[in-house]
Length: 446
Ligand code: GUN
Ligand code: FE
Image (tube, rainbow, N blue to C red; front, side):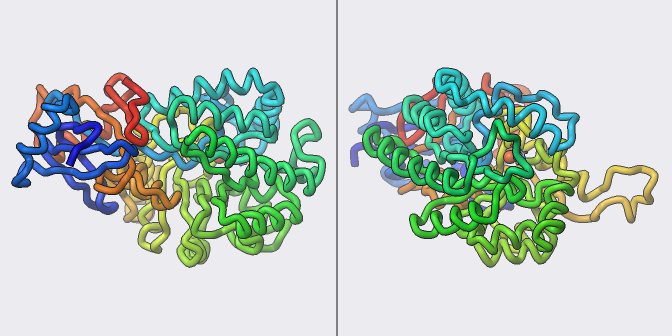
């Protein structure tokens, strides 16, 4: 067997929400199509042969002992145009934040030059944080959304890109909405064709996504039309579901149904759907998600500001709901999925314990629900890949060579057993520790 590149180093890869595999000094063999052809373990009989052949062909890359290979992370929920306002006005309630800050900023993407500048910056920022696949909300502007796709193609990121649909005159400003359902649907159809054409001509990993902003922003005709479009073209869908008290109440007041049931009524909950947040989902909603095989994009930092609650990750997993992780830029302030996986663990601890010391400990929290860093790692990798139906998110033969090489800065000061190293990597990694990033076998950072 001859590989284009053989990386020799220790690796971590997810197995389940409660288990990862650690391999010390494995050989990760990457073929010319950017796929992991094989992972050779130190105990395999042909380990030395493979290593020596790669060395002879000058294909061997030996990592220093304080560096580790992880799968690239998958961010299931990014509002690409909101990157310039990351961290701003997060003290406002969701509806005010949208109307006063976010819609005016997104409206500026009518200027494709501005869009290109922002998206160039954002895609680089995500890659240097180890995010090899991102699912993006774009804006109303088809040209700006194609500019985002071009940045993904040029910089080598796997991109799922959504032409935004929002046309409900009651809930959106006249300066930032589609003027009819027909316009919303036709623009989406044109975008699908043009993005698929761009993917073909560039060879880039680009996929169009059906993107109703959320139930309040859309008319019934648009929700119905987009559900049909996704069904006919077998396309992924993204939206928000049950993010906040306000969003849930809107569905109940307007449709006399749960937010999840409204989306389902319009065929928007499918095995290819990724719904952001879900903090307000009840047990019936979770059962519906499980039945539809729809994924939740858990956005724990954003939820601290806008969620009015903590999304119960463990309960969702117990309901057999697939869960991945999202930054929700800029409801979340950081492009780092490391920061988000840390927050997922922290928020789950607070859900379990409760937060109000004036309530007796036995009543204060749920008493269960805490997740580990292993679960959070699973969400950022295998859970995300499952939601997008991708062969990535794991270091495994036949999967895409989407990976990050990360330095353990504290390894000289503490024991280097697999569990200690793993927890340090999850808690201490910033872009400074991410030495190299590969997407589909191509080095994109480092
Ligand atoms: N709901 C509808 N639009 C948005 C958005 O841009 N961000 C968040 N967090 N929630 C939304
Ligand atoms: Fe969002």
